[in-house]
Length: 296
Image 1: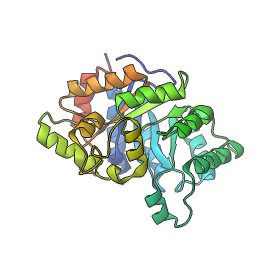
Image 2 (image 1 turned 30 degrees about the vertical axis):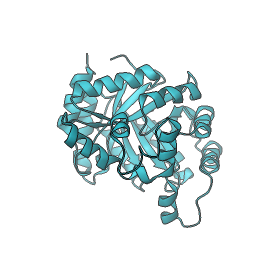
Image 3 (image 1 turned 120 degrees about the horizontal axis):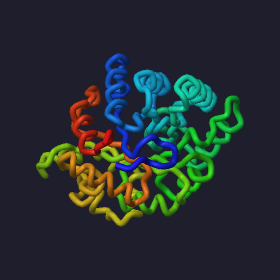
């Protein structure tokens, strides 16, 4: 599989919430294997106060792979801390850390910080202003935004290296590339269910989508792409589930990765679904690496 452009080492990576396990030894060991398997970037959700400690653990276990937050919540990670830790991690680990930033979701922010939610675009613009004015400054090449809507994509293009879209189809990837232009990074998350049985595979995919079907920003984005109210009701239609989650054999997953790359993605990070959040699905990662021919 051809090498990604825009500064990321390779077209495929891994996205895993289980990288946030408290047992740093297990995480470091898994990261070392993923590095050897050829995954270009290790992504993890950074919506906690431990974001930069997790990144440090992953970086310490790798030699070539980059590490990225997908995403660091701007309501949880103060800009001064984000800037200082980003600079420190990149200085210690050869500029292998990428700070992915996002505005999270209104219901979650209201629960965490009652009354503080405001326009996502304004909140992100202010956060980026603080990163650019502080000391140290975070260079734009070291940041991406979790952007789906057109205005946030414009901000990603003008202020950062690009975007990290989550839960999008290849057709949406093409639309994102068209909006963000040829020079910006598009690093797409792709959910994966390694189960060829339609019934059980879709059940696993639906469970993973359950929370997102109740979040307005995702629902609005899918409707912009042509999905209907019926598609997002009742746990999601088969059409929506199959479009968002790659299901089947490792070879079938590779086919979906190639669709995203052909549509304009620079990099696709694979999130293996169907495992408890405390599990590092290492055998699945091995099978996918082999199918992707990362070391070929």
